[in-house]
Image (tube, rainbow over all chains, first blue to last red; front, side):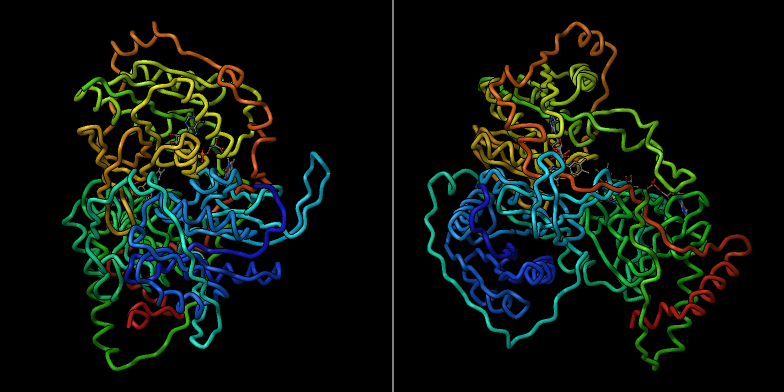
Length: 366
Length: 270
Ligand SMILES: Cc1cc2nc3c(=O)[nH]c(=O)nc-3n(C[C@H](O)[C@H](O)[C@H](O)COP(=O)(O)OP(=O)(O)OC[C@H]3O[C@@H](n4cnc5c(N)ncnc54)[C@H](O)[C@@H]3O)c2cc1C
Ligand SMILES: Cc1cc2nc3c(=O)[nH]c(=O)nc-3n(C[C@H](O)[C@H](O)[C@H](O)COP(=O)(O)OP(=O)(O)OC[C@H]3O[C@@H](n4cnc5c(N)ncnc54)[C@H](O)[C@@H]3O)c2cc1C
């Protein structure tokens, strides 16, 4: 598509049938910011079956409009039918910007649509902004362009990508980076029920035989205030008992490096990092984790990082606010014991502690 | 059943395992990193070779990149891939994922018959994971992303697709494009015999003219996204490291420092 009179910011609203994805609510927050900057409306596209109540929720979190598409065949996400619905809607309504969460759905769906519309797509944005862009080759100046800011090369570089000529400007946005917007149940908004036709091809190509959710609720890392992460240094499933115990004392959750997950010591749902989850707890305690960029990228927004590693040169110490150089099998039992004691003493005292974000996030260098 | 025709897409990338050190000026030192096959693409090659062993297949490796990318294809041949094609052309430089996927889809059309296209889940340099789904769209075939394992049975693919907090089992008709994650099946190394055989094989090198792609639809011109700015980055925090002394002292030292800084682990957790 080339430009014309495209306007409005859209977000794709993901859900699992029982609740809206947290990443979608985060998108509404950043979508609102962008919509206000360019003076446009914020709309959400909601696809599924029997999910009208989600539309009200999307409005209360900041959507001005919700395009609601309900169909028996659309109960669960599959690429082709969803791509068809969204592409048709985009072609008809011409939004200027379309955002997706960079989760397994968004990263499956968005490229399919971008390729169909022959437009650009920026992956895994960690920040979005609006500004002017001057094309050096043609000398042409573009106003109010979406700045799509993303890490690449495993986090070694930060690039600002723009899509000056084609529309819509499309991006996937990394979950866990943007704050949740405030919910305002009294907000006004419009729900537009859309009628759609699915082609035979879309219906038949890929069939879902089974959907399995592992350890439901257990690895609820996204909302966790404290996460204790274990890596290869934990040595095996046995070692994870110590990690779990520390997490339990702190009422926190258990996270893991990919090395620990790949070794089969703990399930994938605990993985933090580039190919796992992006989390933003108040405190992250990394035990026996070396600090590969691909891991650190998933916790860089933790307010405070504490590292325990026996190698004083482990890169994790460069990313940590506090570090202990030592053997985790010696340190953790003592730490757990002391925390238990402190906890027993403080039982009745409940004071809110406001944690300050102390570290720098990304320092860009010339 | 006739042999399955598989095309594996491989990209040559800087070695992610190469030790990245931080230079005095704070930048990352990547100079010593050698070029390797993108790690996920190795898993894809391994998966293709497993199908070949089980059902019989012809496996073609296809790569787009500079002439040096021949090394990656040569290694794929040594691992057991049957044929290798390199799409190499100056006019492709600066292609974004739309242009890259378009060029690769044209090369695939030129190859002609295929049942299965395997990609990596994403690369370790560009990290977008977009090229696979975009190729599937250009070809008008279905896709399954984040595949941990799959099998071909009765003309269908049955695949386990990883999703947040779990997985799905999907069934697709052929042809289909799969993007492969870490399958847990360690990719094989090239054997001595494999290397000897690979040296004798030809790598077909083609230009965009050979695959019927116009100059304007690839490279910087054919790419809707533009890189406005690119900066090197490091993550850093102010650190307080405790070492030395007995375990008891070390832990006390940390807890005391945390307390001084107004951070109370236990209360925060309540
Ligand atoms: C494309 C790609 C995506 C990736 N995605 C992710 C991702 O999402 N998440 C992720 O985590 N990784 C990811 N990785 C892998 C990443 O590069 C690292 O290989 C991985 O994070 C290493 O895990 P680790 O730190 O647990 O193991 P190692 O690097 O092996 O480190 C183990 C550490 O434990 C320490 N140790 C050992 N014994 C003890 C002890 N007794 N006490 C204290 N310390 C001890 C060692 O000193 C060492 O520093 C990805 C890689 C690639 C290429
Ligand atoms: C800093 C930076 C940021 C960028 N950001 C974006 C962006 O947001 N959007 C965008 O459209 N482009 C972007 N690009 C351009 C993009 O990196 C290139 O188009 C690149 O050639 C393909 O993207 P990728 O490496 O992310 O591949 P991915 O989509 O991650 O690759 C997935 C799989 O596709 C196959 N594949 C990919 N490339 C090839 C190849 N050349 N030959 C054979 N098989 C291949 C492999 O199987 C691979 O595992 C960026 C480039 C840079 C330098």
